[in-house]
Length: 275
Ligand SMILES: NC(=O)c1ccc[n+]([C@@H]2O[C@H](COP(=O)([O-])OP(=O)(O)OC[C@H]3O[C@@H](n4cnc5c(N)ncnc54)[C@H](O)[C@@H]3O)[C@@H](O)[C@H]2O)c1
Image (tube, rainbow, N blue to C red; front, top):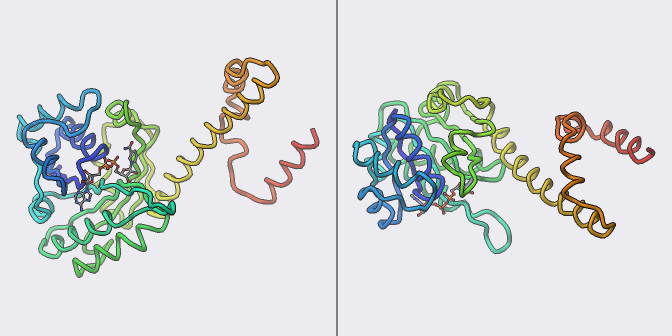
């Protein structure tokens, strides 16, 4: 497949390296000329195990090039992955200005394109951002309708820095949020070789899954540390306690107690506190 990747940072570069290794053709786009030049010289703009070799090989095989020309990238690809940064602002809000800008630019290029194009958001964004920011920017600059004239998906990224290439090929799951079936089916082709569960759902659900995942991981870290503090105060080995805790895959590390239902949750808490 021909893919354009917007944002050659961590997520964009790892995606470029892995997708070209899988046989696809990638055009990378970044505002930063140094990153564009580095890619075109066959050098990775990020440091990560295996990625240097993957980028060098892809450029040598003419499967990867980079540009600052958005129009060129959109016209010469079937699908665009948006991997630009969504940094936190001083007040804690997410800064969606890069995502909005890039969607405006992609929208303007889609206006000139007759073939069906799919735009995929891989950047992490608050639930609701797809419908309130990305889709309106794409529609207004293309003059076309999302889900009809062009496709829109979101596909949250779950990689961890330090093990990014391994994580790309061994994800816990692949989640595709889609506005229309045609777009979801095209995006699915990128993950055809993966053995992880592939879940197709609506864009709002996919956005929320990413936040639920991130929050759950934070809850786990905080919980383990709190148990560690309690164990320390009691002179108990916290590592041993958590090792035994994690062996319970029926009630502890399992779907048990994980369904939102306020009434049931209240009853369960009451019962557990009474024990
Ligand atoms: N890094 C991670 O481990 C990780 C994991 C999961 C999700 N994410 C999410 O993925 C997104 C990207 O993260 P990252 O770590 O790769 O960010 P990054 O800051 O490393 O890279 C973002 C790149 O986007 C470029 N950019 C900004 N505006 C642009 C524009 N208009 N056109 C083209 N390029 C533009 C920047 O120059 C930069 O190179 C974020 O939303 C982040 O939260 C990151």
